[in-house]
Amino acid sequence: MGTAAPQRRDAAPTHPYPAAALAPRPRRAPAPRTAATTTRVLRQLHHDPRTIALILIVPCAMITLLRYVFDGNPRTFDATGASLLGIFPMITMFLVTSIATLRERTSGTLERLLAMPLGKADLIAGYALAFGLLAVVQSALATALSVWLLDLDVTGSPWLLLLVAVLDALLGTALGLFVSAFAASEFQAVQFMPAVLMPQLLLCGLFTPRDEMQPVLSGLSDVLPMSYAVDAMNEVLRHSDITGTFVRDAAIVTGCALLVLSLGAATLRRRTR
Image (cartoon, rainbow, N blue to C red; front, side, top):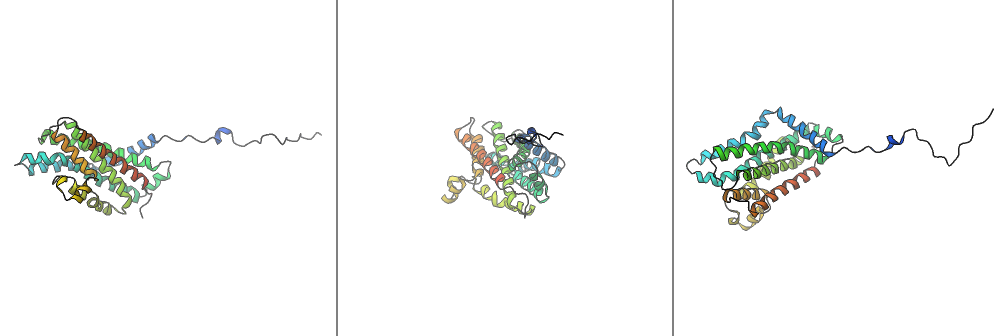
């Protein structure tokens, strides 16, 4: 009876799993994950008519109220209406975004999402895209109402007004996503509004030209993004063509929104304690 031939020592050891199974799986592209987050947020907002009303109706109602407050002096409405056309969307998007994001964190939804193969940047981008789409609709309604129904007298193109209004709303969305990381309850998220937005509202040049303020306050207004949003609106109000100042102001507002979104992704936490 013969014996089995001894195995050669230099032979390569066999592995119980094929090489294809051991190969690293390709990572999923971030675009589908971001799109899935955007779709989920929009689906949730679809079932929340009060939030939809806050986003779409309240800015239009405030601008209409302002128009008839200055009914005896239409020039005053022309001077302030364009600026408020960007400020009102920023405020409403800040409130809605901060509360909605905090609600997902406190309910445990955010923790379950981050346990999946979903990066923080994907999540923030999905939220920003969902609320950004609503911001476009909101700004379009407010701009159309102001220019064509409330007779807002604008020298430049209404499309430029719409562009700045959308950028302001996106900035409000970014700020809301950012501050939600530091709030432990919805009440605290609302409390951040006077701390984050009210100083900008007072120093943005809406009530008095920024160069006529006390020098310290004037210098502080130069680093606040709402100041450049108001300046961009005023450029459209006074000039028929796109000016270099308008391009600079719009670029600063856009850069601030992207910077705050990056900070929001860096400070995103699974659970609020």
